[in-house]
Length: 422
Image (cartoon, rainbow, N blue to C red; front, side, top):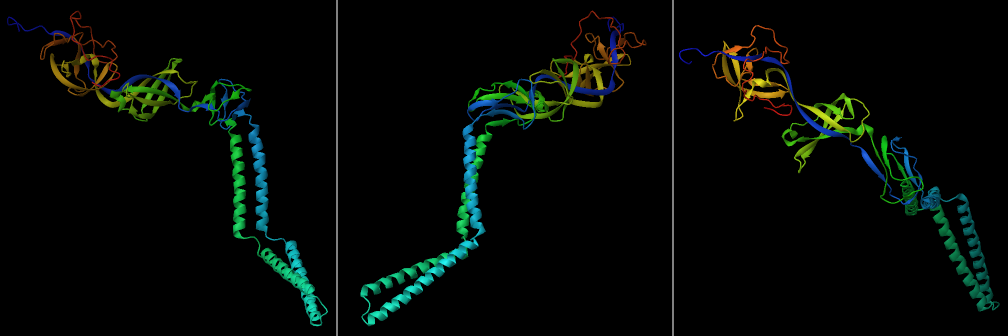
């Protein structure tokens, strides 16, 4: 009031507080990477006899990629197979037991020595009778005694052989021969394993990206031969700032655009959040899988828009209506009965030029969006173009050109706010 006159109402623009959905997004960049990507290397030395691959070729799981010629390993297999055959035959012979013809031969040997012993006994007895009549010499008697002793020894040996044959092989003999057969089988497996290392097969379905050798080259142990990746393992890998690292979790939705495919937008879902921050960049690595098929290749540049948080049926304000103080508090001016009333508000999510008001204003109220500079709490105001139809502002409220557009305006809450929370 000056000189007893009432102050002239200030011309302002207003918009209505509305209800709706608000989503807070985080914009980041990343790249397409293959989580299953390998470098095939040699474990044996030798000339390469098979390598038909070129960059861009597709290989199926289990398909032969590289073959190295090693004749010495094939010879080792042949020798091991022969040794195994001999050991197995001996083991089978032991397990089969004594053949009937062997027993019959042993029995005949026993009978022969029994007959020999009987003959020697008879001749010795005859020599003793002759000695009684002084008709035989002492040397003749000693010879027959010696022959009888030999016959008895041979008879004992023949009987023991027959007993052993009838008893068959012992468990110890069978176990020893079985171990010899196992040892021969192990040597054969070792020889086959050495030869198998000369043939390298694809571990998964994939695409060849680099070929370092050709047929006829000499492979050297641990030298790279070719590289490949699995197309199904392609993901978008990106990093988020530390401030948003804790909010990342599997299942979060995102949209992805690729510089290589600028006309398309892809849906994606977060599938992996790394368990720690990068100690230098202070960022957290996240992986998302694209839910739509396309001609993706590793190292494509990607731009992601990640949905951090969503609020349904929220009280929404235009961002230009919110004024931020130096202390970080927020307030708006609500037009009530022709006067501007200051209302402190708590800001929630922010999407483009729309912010969520957690408290401080209500649905249907009108807030000032232009003309803030000269407004004071309780000051009379006049809405520009009141009664005219709205001008089609995206927020959907009543908005007209302010009469004092040339005046300096206070800075409303305003940066784009796509990545932050007020």
